[in-house]
Length: 314
Image (tube, rainbow, N blue to C red; front, side):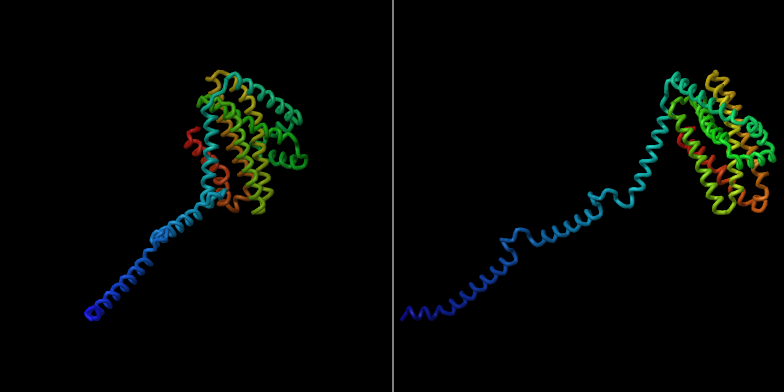
């Protein structure tokens, strides 16, 4: 009876104890769900990992290692590489020096070849050579020579015009040798290639100008004037080049000065003759004539000189 009484008395305590145990078990389950022991990567780390993955993917998309030519900056890189390549080779031509005996031998054979072509061109028609000299200051004779060349299409002018590029290249090369003390043989090749490129661009641009504005006759007349100017200078410069190459340095420098004076005078005569020949054209539009004179005659020479001076090649 006493045992039953004790159990009856302690029943409320047992109920409270059971309730506390159930609450503790529920809290334990909730904590276990929030901190899962079987979860390898926590949620915060997973969020950080996904953010880093997205950043990596965006960086991979921005810089694709499998893209051969990335867009946007390749052209600038290529321009810099090409410019450095050109400057490096031209600097090597100015800095490097060749054997003087080898250069003199090369120039001797070049002069023999040029004299042979000059003799061939002159012997084709000697009367044309006389007219060519007189046409430098006689406009009527120049016009008749222009008409004769259009009718017969003589071979002499292309030969003399080609010799003009070589003779002018040798003249400029000798000026660099005597005044700058650079005697690299490859420099002569670069000079001749530069002269040919300048005149090629001039002829092509003038032909395009003639097609755009319908002044084909005037432009053709002007181009023939350039050819005659080059032909006359070829006949003058080839003997001067020979004397400059095989003379003493003092005499060579004096002849170089004389050659510069001849080139400038013939150039001024050429421009004066062309102004008189195209007086009907430029009198109608003096602005276009001055624009052409600055764009095709003065500006290229000034730009070339400034570029060479900044590079230290002159």
